[in-house]
Structure formats: C-alpha cells, structure tokens
Image: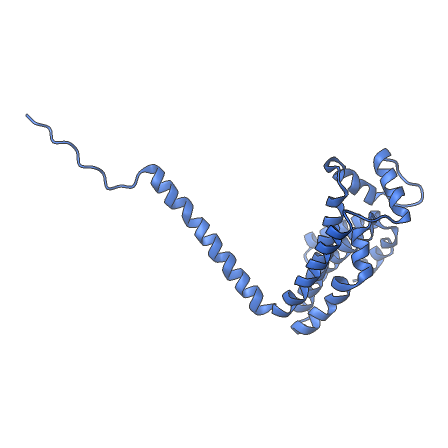
Length: 215
C-alpha cells in the first residue's frame, strides 16, 4: 500500500505570519504620523514657520557656545550641587535638579533641556491661546515671539541658572489650570504640585500660590 505524500501547506509559516503582522503596525504608525504632520501643518502653519528658525537659533547657541555659560549665581548652584548643601540664601530646587543630572557629567544636557523647555513654553502659550481663548493663529503666534526670539531669553536658557525651569513649571501650571473652564480636583492637585516645585526653584514663586488660590 503506497502512502501519498502530504500536500505542502498553503498556510504561511509562523515566521512569515509574524513578519506580516509586525509590519502592519509599522505602516499604520507611519501613516498616522504623516496624517498628524499634515493636520499640524494645515492648522498651525504660521506657528511652525515662526518656530523653526527659533529652534535653529538654539542649536546655533548650543554649538557656538559649547556647552553652557556662567553667571555669578551659577557657581553657587554648582557648589551646592557638588557638596549637596542647603543654601541659606536661596532655595535649593535647582541644585537638586543639577544633582539628578550630575551622573551624566556634562553641562550640555542641562542647557539642551533648558532650550527645549523654552520651546515647550512657546508651544504651551500658543496652544492655550488657540484652545481656551480661541485666538486667531496670527495672534497666538505673536504671543510666543518674545519667548522664541528674545536674546536675553536665549541667554538665560544657556546659563546654569534656575530661571528657565522656573518659567517652564509656572507656564505648565497656568496651562493646565486654564485649559478647561472648570478643572477637575486631580488637575488642581497637579497644578499645586507644579507650583510647589516652581517655588523651590525660585522663591519669587511663593506669592503665586495665593494668586492661583484666588482663581
């Protein structure tokens, strides 16, 4: 009795099927990214045109003045970071932030993050103006120009100073608080936490707790 050989299976192999399945999310992700970019360009073209040169300015500052600049207070911040002392004359939040970044052993990370914070501040100003206050694109973009193109702002971002992280935390708190007319309790708690972090970055943020409480 002859046994006929089994016909080759037309089912895709497990390896091939896995390859096909794994390729689908990749194509979907790329298509979603292209669609998101197209929507961003069509809806926020003016802001993107203004934002792009500002990003290039910060790249130029980072590469032209490698990798940081000093101010009088910078040395005290660094000294408090190295010895991890609580300064009796200023709050220590920025020194703690530097201590977190200390294992990277480069000031470039500090200033790059501060440049990115400034760009994020401009994005939050634009988004809040468009979403909550329904400002036209040109007016919302105009509101971001002082942050994006002021020379002293770019200098602050490149200094070992607490000003830019303080401004970032404050802007994030304002954006979260004003994004909706009636913020939830959880969001209010998050805003309070951000204000607390801002206060330990710069002591001038302490009176803002009363201002936010009144709102």
